[in-house]
Length: 398
Image (cartoon, rainbow, N blue to C red):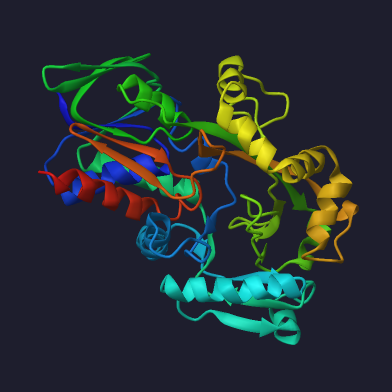
């Protein structure tokens, strides 16, 4: 029997979308296809588990709107499902006068995005929250926190299946065809059909869109984010979350400190080109992924725009001492013996031909399909709101 909705991708966005399709349209048949043996194996399971509230994002953007709405929904979801989470707040730290000006502007942006309770802290007040922090001032953002996203994925799958939906794992989509008003997805597990296609394929969203006939205006360029973790004896250097003030000259946030929901402190990430879309280690190479990246003019324009940042990020990838120096800007007392190698994740980041990273979420609606072509951070936090927005877009023309 054909499904009403065929969702490709079993990460947190795909799962949240499948669940929203069921709860907002009761009785509709939903089928989700995931290429891995379990859900949430890539971006959803390779991140620092932060609940982002929408502080950084341009007011009026889809990302800002859905982050603010999404963090509230995610916290409520975790409370209801008894999933480990903590709203612990974070500090965004200014280290000099130039950053202080940007910190004030960031405070204004947060207020424009509807965030309440943001506090501007001087040096002494900062130390009450983080006694070992550097810098001259900070914003305390009380809404932010930490969560177990893999557990969220498992619970979403349970709910989708409990509502009569179907989740097919080990189903790698190799071809999409349109036959008589239905989509036919040819996979490594057989053929599956559905009337409306929802592409939530994350790291492969551009390729799935191509299978559906979309012209590739942007492509996913995989940037690996590498982490160190504080040694057990050094975890007292950081209490909660410590972030830098974003530099508008660079497209990435910079290294920061994150307390993990199940214990430990992560430090990072950097941002280096991965040689595979699932390249969690430096040695992992996928020739097709690498060819896609290095033959894309946008990547070379990006490197030409940000040569210093590109070099520094690469240096940090190979030099523990250089990585530690970047961390010392936020916590001066940290030393190379206080950190050890941690995990890594890969961002599903869309890049335009002009060499710019696509900053906002990108949802493209077609007559019988919707493609999520860019959903980097804070997509995990905002996943329930993204799913809601997708359903509203689908229903808008009905």
